[in-house]
Image (cartoon, rainbow, N blue to C red; front, top):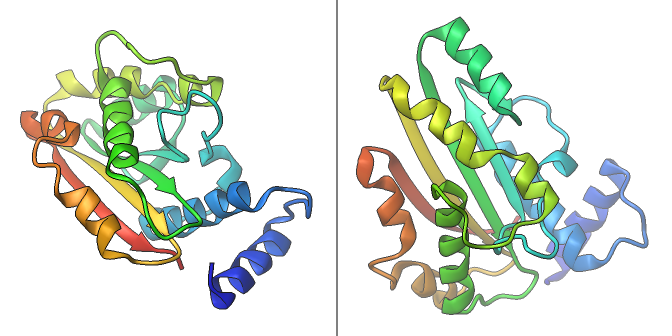
Length: 196
């Protein structure tokens, strides 16, 4: 990481109250998650609630489900929003972050396959407790029958450098799983973001 990013990450550590013993890669995941989440969700949130990284994380560091402008964590919250609003606008936001400048094409593909598995009728990949608690599949199934509103699936790949290899890894896969997820009328986007 460059000096500016290092200083921003150090300031973030202090502001958020993270331990000085927290490893830099994990701290950077939280930092990247915060940067992406802040641009997607203007309300207050706890960055640690978004973090899903660890073993069996499907190559994801952050998962956000925003329904009708509300950050949700459970099917019950989605049900309440259906009753209240009579429509659903849903955004599923997934983030993968690396402190280095380059992602391999395999890492990007694995992230897409992990996201596809989150929406699958029957999961084929193991997932950690943090991901299981997000109830992504159940939330998506609750939304599907409603038929009004819109659904967006966004994937952000965050790195402290913006390298051509990173961008090429994302856009070179013409048949990535995000295309399969968004064929039913949902919108999908994939972005390479330089963090900060």
